[in-house]
Amino acid sequence: MKPSARLPVLLVALLVQVPVLAAEPAKAPAADSKAATGASREELVAYLARIDKRMTFTSDYKGTVRIMGLSKQNSETAVEIHVYRRDKTRDLLFMTTKPKYMAGSGYLRVGNNLWEYEPTVGQWTRSTMRANISGTFTCEADFERSRLAEAYEPKDEGTEVVDGVTYRKLFLTGKPGTEVSFPLLRLWVDPDLNIVKRIGYAPSGKPLRTDIVRGYQRIKDPLTNEFVYHYKEVMEEEAEEGSRVLVRYDEVVLAPLDPSIFTKSWLESRSR
Image (cartoon, rainbow, N blue to C red; front, side, top):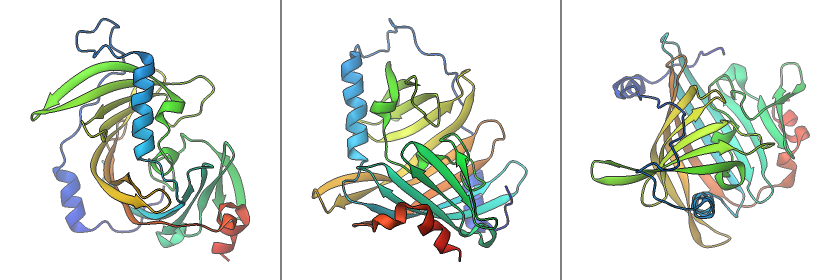
């Protein structure tokens, strides 16, 4: 990671004010936990599918993701990435545009394979869903559609009340043979099916990253005329280093994209 772009002073102050988030151990609750709601596996899978559906676009997606971070060693980063998605086929391409020395680099998913492109050497290398993106600790799952129901087995962890609001807690385990960014995941979901907090864990149960979802944007999908909910702002904290980033999802446009965008030649042509 070679951070160079300066983080705005106001944002630095905002990041510093956010309290450190305690990461819970990944141990799943006992089956007879008093806090459990008693929902069956089928009901929990259906619940996850409802979360996925309200976050999935029928139209093609284009947007700009801005990642602004401050590490524990006080190094600063400001990365801008253009994201192109076609949820119905899981096509995904993202291209870094800032800082300047990273411009033109990017990632392309072809089928189940994720490829990283380095324009200075014109080389493609195989990547994984768990790999960090563009020198930050964000990962592929931060850019693609939600697929909780197809990728994870859920377990009920009951509810938790904070400031009078009841949040549902779920503990998820990645299905065998399915590549996911976090093998274990704990979610807090509000009554409107918004994920407000999540903790990702290693297979050992070690906390890797805690996310606080600070806002959603409500977007009307032109193909269905239904509203879809997309992240607006997420605060992510890496457990090991204590580094934090604020991820903003801006300039979202839902409209047909040229199929040529989801090709290696398209990304290569951006840096010529």
